[in-house]
Image (cartoon, rainbow, N blue to C red; front, side):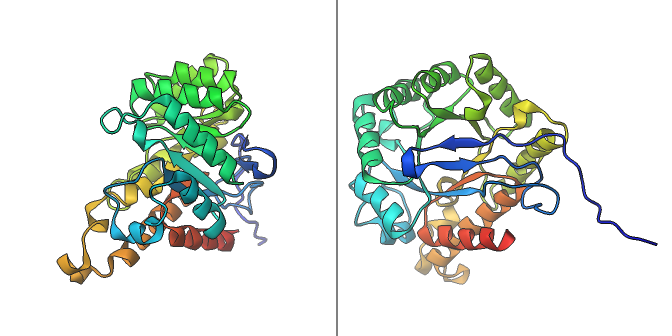
Length: 313
């Protein structure tokens, strides 16, 4: 009896999302099969890995990250350059933490200048993220998009209560945007519907379904991403065909296990190695689920995950 491989057929494909300028253009998505299933279809663009940079000095990062970035914490331009040049980050996520109204409450003008300075300093694509404050993000991200209209960076994140302002900024100033929803397939789809109804091209939208780290909801995140991918590929649902972004570093390095000093818990091992392993496991898990863009914090995590992606391809 002859044998044939059980190859699945798919009815849809993930949108190809392109951003960046000149020699720092990057593309994600475009695949017409499940993640790493290169025997069933085509995956023209590999997942993109990014290192995160903050606009201000963080005051609660663990020592493992201080050891890496402590010499450039006070200058986002130097920090971004170090990530791009020393650690070979293919992409940088610039998080505008300083604009948080519950923190420094920096002005949109200050934030926009920082974005412009980073864009001038590095030769890799940029993702610009707000803090999640509905009103302040609307103000800041609009200003950032307007002042840097000539640059095509990925702008995020839009939420149900401010998507109109951020989507309008994307349309008006040639930006692709990220929509964020709280770990729910239907909410993610609905936000995409709302954004496209405003007139933004679906090819210029990415989804951030929210990220749970290892031990803190990674399996639920995996399930949501998996269901989005199945709807996009198997059912051909156009409102779930946007590439997916997961902000892994932010989630992993804030948990208590990665802030405990060695002397306080010697039985669980070296805190640097623990944190890196935690970040790598979370990132690889979500890449296997179907994430297209993963942001991290430790350069060794980036290096390890990049090697794993190479092996899987």
